[in-house]
Length: 323
Image 1 (cartoon, rainbow, N blue to C red):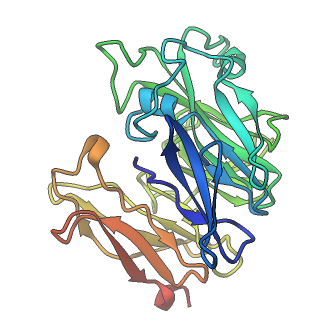
Image 2: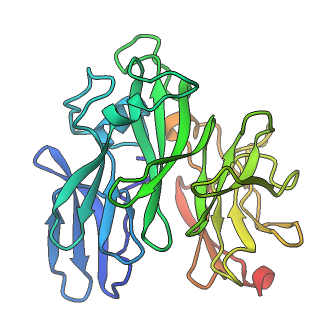
């Protein structure tokens, strides 16, 4: 539930919104026309939408909830709870008009792709964090696995998993391991050919790195200026590549979270504020700021419980910084 119902505008539409829901013991998604109130139901939930609004890619939210509680949805049983690498679970592509869907990447297939020279068929496999490229041709996802399953008494909710980052065509073909390090965390497409991600490539320090898709080309971004992991996106200002919107997790005894803007060409960082996260907001129940911008890049919205009234949505001015 960290990601909510994923309510968003359907790309390319002026009057349709989409969100995830639950119906008759299964996860679905709803599309509503805000002008007519007409609502239709698609047979699968969404995880990410293509920029042309034609396709959704999605994962198995029940399995995510089993293997990384807080990131899936409660209320629907996982039929593959006892399976480490099921053939009928993984990533689906769904037509946004017809609702037709197909399994394009299975967990069984992913488990056969070697990591450090060995397959992962003896591990508990799942996928998380899907995102379609800006040109709608490829998408990215994180393949994760654990030694311990959800019913093991030594199962650890917030650690114990390893991660690698894949890209693929929107039909699941041409799979490519973009970051094989095992440490991939937050990421964003900069453009159709580059991905900026927090990770720790072999022999290098943990930092944000820029990867060129389907190549070994990787370079550090904001070295020393963005020293901790955060929820990074590119601001839709300038050429769309020069401003990174990011944040921090609670720091120090004061538990301050800091959303900020980082100007890549000049290496200047602009903090947008420091927001206290009460100690009750930890683990699965934490409230990350998850900064995101308006379409013109002049406003930034964050989630924060600092005001004493629980989790709230706050809007910050950024126009004076980005111009």
